[in-house]
Length: 159
Length: 268
Image: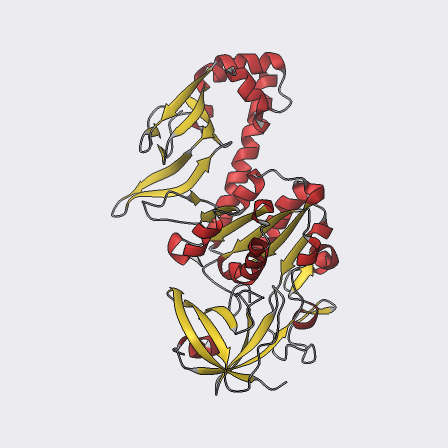
């Protein structure tokens, strides 16, 4: 069975990270599993972790009065999820729910945060990588906001 | 070119405002062969003509299939046609997807919204040749209710990799929610041996091309289907001129390498 640090090494998010840091990050991690419907995160709850999804699908949701829970995005195999641990007040801003059986590596944000405060090189590396994910998610969200499939500019899309 | 008269054999509602017509010729009318990616001019008598991509199998000589979104007067007139109704058909016109160059390559089909319709003949052709294992379809739609060919998507997923993503969904949808660029960015392929066909809203294709180029795919391996206001369909009227090309005659399928100079010019 592979160790967590081996699994991290295989993930593009950790490409090029020094071995010493990988060992430390791996030491903050644990393998977790969730069944469909289980909560991985709840809005306003303390955010002390982030996740690397290895299997299954996770829905990022929020509660809209009068509509119930609305899913904004799904994340799946290979995706990194959770950056609320990085910034005060360290609380989740959305709910996250397992859509089906999910297996993931849960990494401790608190111990990483403390390490990053002491070791700014690691802090910069992680922040740079999270910034890239945030940028990609923002771009995808902007595309969703464009509602490109809903308003054809010409008689018929693709025609 | 004079339109041939065709009859609606079958009409299917894909979802409100989008429908599929199965047509066959009347009397001595003929069904000209077509290549996947080509389009016809459909004439709603007394109202006008619109360009519509052919979305049925290219090896079926008995008729044509078109999937149409209601948007203006002509498409509204076509929407009102029922089985037995008649309309005029000119064509097929335009360039086609380069299916002959697919052998031995990984094939990425990227469709958004109604853009799946012009790619459906490609899928039929590839599956009929048993080449599904090399094909990956990325389909983005507004919502699960506004997806085309839902039954076929399930069927195709047995033979090829089908990744559907929707912008929004009600609770109960267990598929992917997000932009179509996400699964495309997450997929691994040999950029030097792959080819991509894109069809959908232009802005979607722009973002998808960016992803493909970042993953190392050469511009010569990316093909896209363009839309403009086509009228004559023979390159004479100039309505669909786009840079030095006419979409109706030189397109609608273009190789990105050949058109990238003006693809990124705004308002062209």
